[in-house]
Image (spheres, rainbow, N blue to C red):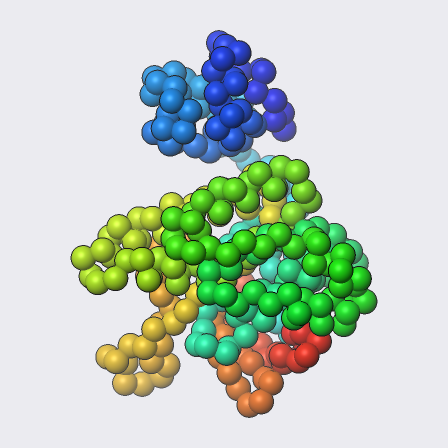
Amino acid sequence: MSKDLSGLPGVGDKTLEKLKESGYDNLMSIAAASGGELSAATGIGVETVSRIIAEARQKLKMGFEPASEVLKKRDQVGKITTGSKTLDVLLGGGIETQAITEMHGAFGSGKSQLAHQLAVSVQLPKEKGGLGGKAIFIDTEQTFRPERLRQMAEALGLDPKKAMENIFVARAYNSDHQVLLAEKAEEILKKENVKLIVVDSVTSSFRSDYTGRGTLADRQQKLNRHLHKLQSLADVYNVAIYVTNQVMARPDVLFGDPTAPIGGHILGHQATFRVYLRKSKGEKRVAKLIDSPSLPEGEAVFRLLTEGVRD
């Protein structure tokens, strides 16, 4: 797929420069943008922008295509091992690229531990369940622990110092900062062989910035845009997106589990895979696959050890 912008007919050097300066330096990033978004970012008029987007889409043949072509694209999907074979089986082979995997559960259910494990596992070669790639870690709850990475890397026979250099970390202080970091992540994706983006947790800063029912619509709209950005990074750069989410108590539930994931339908629809994690005895954790486009619902039991996530 041609990524060069010079092939766009009727686009002058000045306009090209503006597009590149605003971070739209390949056809896919332009084709996937909306007219308003591209106009606001570049300062180019809406009419011109609409024509540029149409040209980019034309060049990339972004219309209908046979299912056989879609299957070819699916062949590029990579899987990252979680460290537990039973959990990998539940997820159809591991955490998928080109998709958002959301894990929700109460405090201590293992969401952040799994985030750390994946940031290390992604660096393994393909034959060992990795993708030989690097990771980006957006930390919103101060859960990131480099010493945990060291333990996990040593357990997998990786050089801990090198493993940590392959993980780019940023702490998000509020929802605006979190949205900005997702955009900044693209700059790293262009330069480095990143195969995983972790957001731990995806909803907490939105929840603290928007309190009360009156702000719910604004919060959900902003969360929706953020998730769309993450999905677009997953598609364009073939990376896996792993997000964690908190749960809230539902006092109206009398039978079964009285918790529900935060984020409502927006997160429910945007996440390709949704998994509910809960604590069991000791180091045991139970993962329940709640939603997936192709896999049956099911459960897997895994353990959280000093070495990381294991069967």
